[in-house]
Length: 190
Ligand SMILES: CC(C)(COP(=O)(O)OP(=O)(O)OC[C@H]1O[C@@H](n2cnc3c(N)ncnc32)[C@H](O)[C@@H]1OP(=O)(O)O)[C@@H](O)C(=O)NCCC(=O)NCCS
Image (cartoon, rainbow, N blue to C red):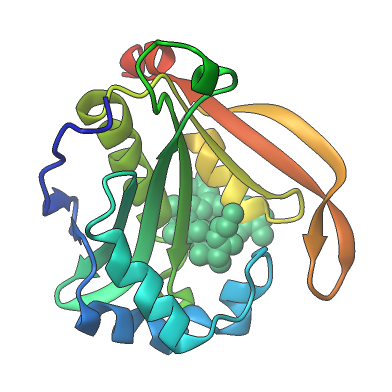
């Protein structure tokens, strides 16, 4: 299921989603370590060279559908959808790679305009329609209201409230939420 090709770029409202180029990564690095971005991330401040290497490697990884969001030539956000096996799949003979993990980041200068929701919606479409995934999950700190609001706007279900299950670099163990949506549920989304 994960071998099917995904076609990029995709126009999503005013945004163009596409796999990252080196110049795109430069633009992301201009805001990636901003305190408003790192505040509720598990992977807080990134080292630029390692970040660049990982993002450029994603282009050739069939299980990694990472994109940048371009608004009139400015990279205002990123999205990622990584594909992996569901529970027990590794032992079975059913098709592999049934689950996706979703993530998104927005340049604080462009927050609050619905861009994270648009990126996430497009990646859920890719996951369910192009890749045939069974289920997609996303997680965040419980305190990251803007992030879980994005998931709820998309109709994702809060499946777990993990008490102190998430390590925060400055605040220690904090509560986390896990959200999920199934392909059958996504298909029913208006
Ligand atoms: C979280 C983040 C992705 C949201 O991006 P965005 O483009 O502003 O999101 P959207 O505009 O699509 O939706 C945000 C929603 O959260 C709401 N919101 C924003 N801040 C909020 C807060 N402090 N409390 C409650 N709701 C909040 C917005 O009002 C909006 O909901 P609405 O459309 O019902 O009004 C962005 O702020 C970001 O990148 N933050 C830093 C990195 C991060 O935390 N990423 C997620 C990791 S799990």
